[in-house]
Image (cartoon, rainbow, N blue to C red):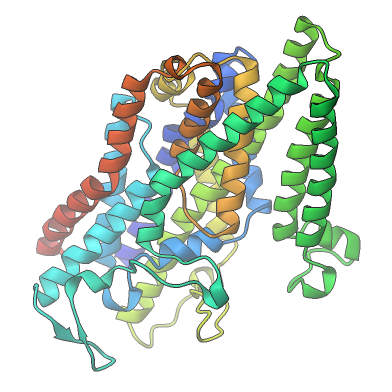
Length: 443
């Protein structure tokens, strides 16, 4: 039980570090454009980090918890993974490198699990509980096909989104920038496109809503408020609100003078940065929830017959067996509180990289980048994919830079960031493996 408590404490410390490490992702553009002071910006971001507690479910947490097969590891594996993740996060923060806290945690968890499998079984095959031959590398859930043709999961999918998340963010911000640029001209075509987009958004979101009859645990007696505040529905309401707000601005953009347009864009940056902070809190806090849930599952598995207190009554969902997940309320509350507290602590070294070194950012570019980043995070969270908020916003900032000209992006800085992204998982995995072997000597 002592090791389990240590893991929970360290996981929350990691969440706190994640907050100040990744705070720059949400506030860099509003600070760079002087919409908010650094202190105001971190307060703004921290508030929406915490607000995500009432918006998002636990899909990403489930994916992270199943990075390694919990029936085949022990608590030392998870402890080593969390320690390695904390070390890499602190190092990259100190160097001002906006690496991915998400991939650090995934890499650490997977690396420690592989080290455990090698230590226990060596490199040769062994007979598992199912009577078939297994190998050390199978301890990690590399790929699992989606149920009923849905989105597949596994570490390979997470690695794929190292590339896909920034690409989606870049494409989305590029398209939003082009949309805004055309809307600023006195031309009827952009307005027709905008109205058509508004109609399509309302139609799509209304069709994606979960009706009252399908809500498992309604939050209110009122049907209306239960539907409105269902976690699944809130995300789609937010998507609609963001798109419709930008659309409304596009309809009047051409009638504004330069001063009025800049003032309006600065107000819209408050909305876009809030939306991104909400996505950041929802995506990254769930990863720590997943680690805590995995730790409890491993503890129960390695101590058969143990009675768990209600505050640690965690059950991992299993779609194949029809088992629904259970998570005590204090775990998500603690995780969201920790990441919000970390954001309040700031992360000014990375703010400088994100807000000025990649490309010069104005209010126009800030709105486009943050809006694209927020929409990308909402959709990937819906697909239960733990993506990097760092990669997403970096790609979005590059996308807006490309609308000016290719040379507007400082590619030397960008290449250095990409190297950090590529190396994060393998370095975290190797570090976690080393930490596992050291801990195994003493525990």
